[in-house]
Structures are given as C-alpha cells and as structure tokens.
Image 1: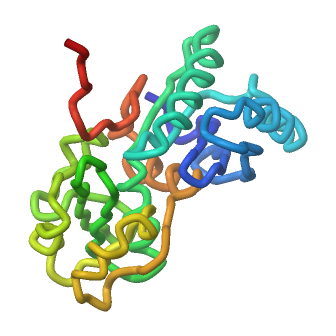
Image 2: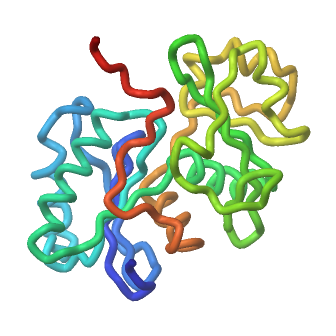
Length: 232
C-alpha cells in the first residue's frame, strides 16, 4: 500500500476530473477531454496536462480511481490505462467507491453527519448506501460503524416503493442520477433530499483515500450490483 508521502494520480470518470496529491496534499487538478466513456482522447490530454504541471507520469507512485457504481465503460478504460502504466514499475492501482466519496464530500459541505446515496441499479431497482461521516471526514457504514468495503456488499437493492425504508431518519439524501430517479426520491417527502445530480470529483476520491488509505482496494474492478448474465 502507498504511504502519505507518495504522489498519487486519481481519475474520477463520473465527472471526468483528475487530481494529483503529493504528501497528502492536492497539488494539481484538471478536467479530462472526453467526449464519451469509451473515447480515447482523454489519455493523451491527461499526459499533456500532467507534463505542463511538471508532473510527468514517471513521477507518479500510485494510481487511484473511483470504481462506481456507474460509469462502467469509463471506469474500465481508466483501469486498463492505469494497469499498463503501473506494470513496468510494479506500482499499485487502487480503487474506492464513488458513493462513499460523494457521502464524505457532501457531509462536510452540508454539515450532515449521515448521508444516504441513491442510484439507479436498473432492472427496476435502486441501490442505496448509507454512511456516517465524522468531522474529520472519516466515512463509516451507517448503523454498523464498519469501514466501507468498497464492494457491492456496501449497497442495498430496493424497489422504488421500498426506498423510504432504506433511508435512515434525518439522513441527507443525494444522488448522481437524480434526473433518472427523481420520482422515487421525490416520494420520500423530505427536505433533506438534494434535487440535482451530484457526483464526486477526483479530489473527493483523494480526500476519502487520505482518511483511510488502508481501505482502498488493490487491482480493483468496477462495482457491479447484479450477477453477470451467462449465456446458456
């Protein structure tokens, strides 16, 4: 695992941002030039931006990205690029949940100690993860107090009419897909729901990593909430 003095490159595809931290402090940020999840132009643009900031790929000690849920094509493309860059020097490729990072960022921004993140799981279901966030930004699963696993185990799948029972009382409710699931969130009849799409940035992923670096997954895969469909 990396240490606090390492230089980390982080990419977050849900909002197409990148950030670099050194010694635990964010030293550069930017936007990816991506016209779509599979568009290849983001990579040479990123390399050029890093060079302009005096942060060549050779100066990077570890690679970090948000692994969902969501933006699967974009996440896979980032992981493939990171694995290619990391292999020659045996550097770590790490992943953290977008939902946990969003909860941490919105908790601090809105002074909300409990945050429920909701998304569209498709197949007529929603996914929900509820977190408690301390004043210093440490994120724990609501109720159990356990650290997030950054896997599908952190998420409950519910029907839209079951959403109310999955939201802790008084929790701030946020979603990166509000436009898709606005009717379900609207049915909660709470003033604590943010009625706009909110997505974590690469800097938010780095902040979550800084609060619990040991929790990051090594050689991660995107977070899938349904079993793979196997052709018969």
